[in-house]
Length: 232
Length: 245
Image (tube, rainbow over all chains, first blue to last red; front, side, top):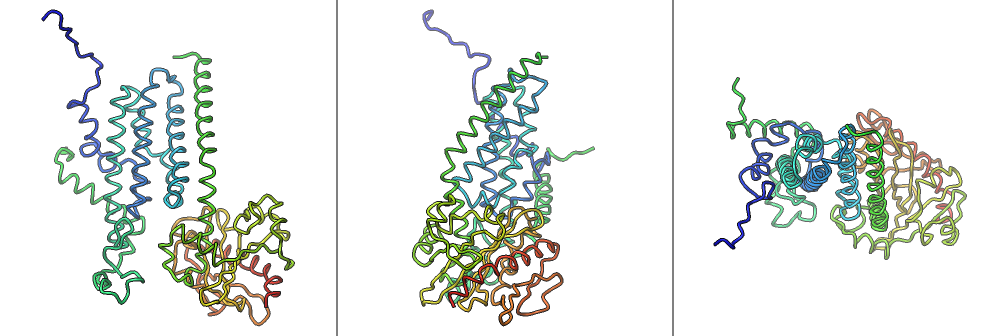
């Protein structure tokens, strides 16, 4: 058996163990950027009027978070300490501009509706926070998992908030009518009787409702996950 | 700590790489951006006659917009003196194909009295004609613009659609988003006999049922901007429209 080379697992080997899974799943629950860290609230209020916009925003943030983390992590040894924040900002801003240009070319309606909020991903504290707290001190692989986890953790909350706001505000999900006043082209058809009993709650379309929904979500999250309750 | 020159070197390389990357991307996608912008403004133009299109405007497809523009709309470029501008003259100013849809109104707006005005004539299936005029002015933060569709008496408004660059969402931006507010314009008149009156957006609620609409609470200046741009632009079309009567 002497001729069988025993390959020792390298210390820095890429594996997907318990620690790595935690990187990915922690931000979804125990360390959620919105409901636990209360970051990224600004955009969570602004783009959650409809699920379509929330989905586009979530994908954009996942993209920016993932690649900003990987790029920063890959460059972490060569980024001069004196200007590291500026370098991080340039990386984020570049990625956001890429997202903006691509959306403008391939998803123009969403681009028009999200308008300024795409640009505001640059100032989304989640992205910058992960770069400074994680990517500057870890390898690209772990950083990728961390970025992905945080982006998805943000996106899930965004979609949940948008679901409640769109459903109760407009009676729609992803722009498809579920309840509420029958659309004009259906009047006098059999289908119209399915809808009429619910009138859209306009408050849910306005920004304050996002605060209520997020607050209730935080409450529900804490009630469900006892680890988050701070007994002091 | 790294030396200053090595930091400078890093920053220099980084900015060069980033700017090259973005420049290439911007250039590569430019034709798609332009096509999207053009389609968007065509769609906004149709918004003024949304009620007369015979289909659900909120669900209109890109293809339907192009079809309507190709088959049911005739476009002209006119001047304030009442003369039509020929295709060649419009194209000579650098506007593609010399058609009204490619006229850059942000640029023309600055020319004052010498500006070119796009005019779209939509013919409904039953032969009724609608004349879509353009207007542009200042809101609270930046420019606002819109289209006003007139019925064939050149007096009654058949519908409007407004857009803006940077008005406050929920306040000034309501001129675009609040469909009920926009709907108020339908049926208003812009002439009293032969005197030009336009439509006044009145703070505190419309007093006159024919020439005024309710203002938007919290958006007085944007409302005044709408009033001003309608006064400014609609009268410019008068000499040309008179020749059609």
